Length: 77
Image 1 (spheres, one colour):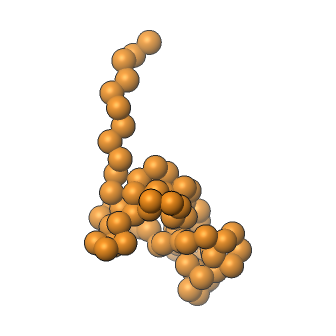
Image 2 (cartoon, one colour):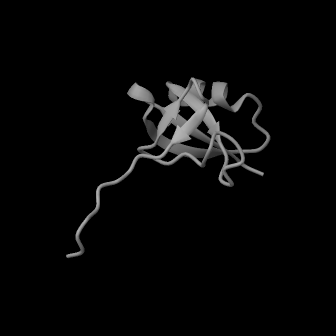
Image 3 (cartoon, one colour):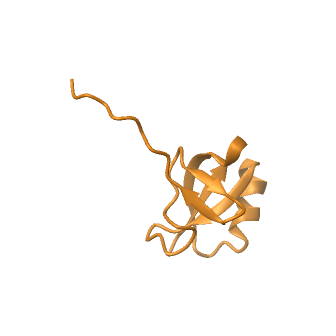
């Protein structure tokens, strides 16, 4: 099964989520070496870290969870 990693930017904001092969060991270090930055594993089923990371979410390192950001209500066109 593939692995999913979230890139964490300033303020803990999730910049993107990528998929890497299941055979990659130390995926966070692999992602950092390939793309730079800080990477945190996330799970599509939300089995850990509160939820599956999405762009714009915030990663709270203290609680080790992804926090969804509330989007503003948008009026239909």
